[in-house]
Length: 220
Image (cartoon, rainbow, N blue to C red; front, side, top):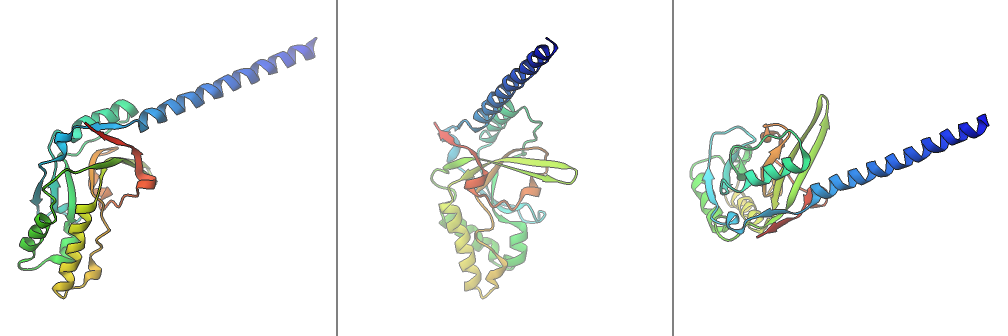
């Protein structure tokens, strides 16, 4: 009788463990499904962007950026918080870095270059047309003392890449050292939210859609 009682207890324990494992699996799958559900962006938020030169910042800031409408990022940030319940910080303004201060200082500093760079940016059509989001990106890094994470919109990069290719051509035409500038060293990303407010730590961000894309973005 005692052995039967012991077996009964073990059966109950195993059944409880199996049920608990199934519940944990279903919960984690539900969380992942919620995180990877499509985000929605208004079509009107993807046009009318403006170039802004901001010389004199630190190395991680944009010497030249493309400013999006201020109403683009906040709803996405709130949705990320609602999905993840993470403690998040949000950027003060929505900007896609086009040319970093560090890149300008290393390769483009000199008389006449700022005006030429702005002309190339306009000729590349960066202020015209629709900026199409490719996905909501997510990157998380574990390091001594904790982890840090960031969410960002990754955009289709045809015009962005055309502009940076022309910058490389400009260096060669001017007889400058083109190796000081990597046209593919930066991706067309707009920061949306992060685990802390130091978004400059993620710049330059070179996104890989295969590993960084968290969820699709639908345009309505």
